Length: 429
Image 1 (cartoon, helix red, strand yellow):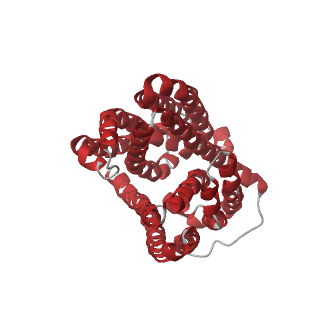
Image 2: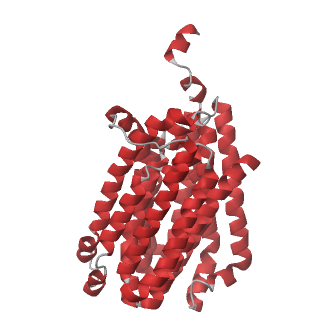
Image 3: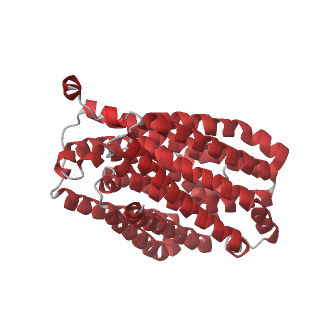
């Protein structure tokens, strides 16, 4: 457990650092102009899922690189193939980002907000492509056991983004945000590529795409990206359903959703750090032991967050709202949110474990079942029981997903020992 904790801490700090950069941008925009902040919120509502999907696809590379930790040079062809897959997924994400003004106009966003977007969609589309051009460097470094190196790229991005946002937003508005995003992303990409070169001892370079190998990578990566999109999409529907309960309930739901995201940072960090251990397991028992350790550590992290919120919930909520009624509503729903978050933490580790076993397609089906039921129930539940019913439904969906992911991991991990026997070895046996 200590080794896993050491591996997870740099990833946790990297994720927190990334959140700080986003908070600074939001704060600066909030003080700049209300319409500008509204336009940024519309943009981020699409950019975050698009970027998360690209990032999800890149995380699928871990189980292909991890077996070569002792001999990184053997993974170079895989990394080259991954770059082509990364660029393809990045191009799709960038195209979606470019369509934000059209989507905003079609969904009834006020014209002044749409016009305020200006050049921001173009800058953020470039930013998505810059991120994709790294070819999943962070995932590769984690797979090779270079977790601390991931922190430097995130720290670089957060510092550059924060400084440039403070400098550029007052005179340029959202154009300044776009410039800051592209420059910070480019700086982080440069640091990532430098660290990757150190890990391999040389530049990886490019090679002609090997279609068969890229398809093999895609079979693990694309279902993972699809699962991320399902989660973001369904949570968007849940937010829409919450908005039918009234302004204060909508605000309380937004606060609880933000707290949920913060609580999951530790769990996601542990889940990512556990991928090499599960991938390199010699038999089913070792894979399951690695997953159990990761799940326990993730639950402990989520549990500490839960205890802090239960003990200091009133004080924490004052940071998110000045409205006493909103804070009281959120405080009343806090136990349900914590239950939902604990289940989400456990399913995240098991789902990531399935990716480590190259069975992300199974995790995708589990998401389709658990969150499919949630999306069907969201609006009727909100109309009947309000956001209290919604958070009960979310806790139930995450609980179901936790069970499905856990059973799925147990089932597929049974093949770990058998799949390592090559056909030639099998004949000898």
